[in-house]
Image (cartoon, rainbow, N blue to C red; front, side):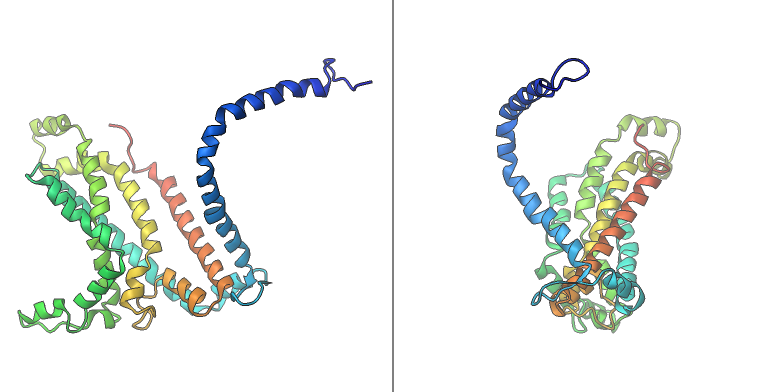
Length: 315
């Protein structure tokens, strides 16, 4: 005798409508999933798979030549208790982010305000200002930057015209990091375009009403432009901060992959690269990568939690 449920309908009978519903849904959505198949393969094979693998390797001793050996939390303990280069690379990276991101955003906003005044040839200026963002992270631009700030580079040749003998910017630990910050600021095109789009969304009648009330340009900037632009500022700040933590190519090229002079340009990503591909400590490098991921996630979460106090999404 077939088992019956409390309603008198067997489990097999209840399953039939579900199977029929699933069959209809699959036949209806199968073409869509088929088109998404390349993305699924890429996501699981090239993104999720390596992420989970690196998480496992962060708890192992792995040198690419021998099988991974499980060591538990030894890599993380060493990072926080017995690795001075970790602390140095973190200080350099935090200093870079702390100075480069606000200066880049301020410069990008200033240029966007100038372009928003409706000058002639706006598309040309917009393209010219955006160009450094396309080229700034490339090896060629990093090499050019190294030549500009070398001891006998273009910058010092220009200063000599005024009788000023400049230092070797990239080999002096007092100035080397600032050359990288200057390069980051020079790549202001991307946030500038976003700021310009945000400025175009602010209603002009608000400025007209404020002008009739006798408000100055400076007061309109603080009371109208900035409050209505805070969602764009928030977005740019998040993106540029993440990019700052990920910055690698300029420091690698300008320092020759060493982070010198005396580790003043040892970015966190450069130190991670050294551990992975110079010393082949893949397990240790994986632990460093996960710490960086956690730091970026904590910063992003904190930014979203505090955004409700200063980001305005209404008029």
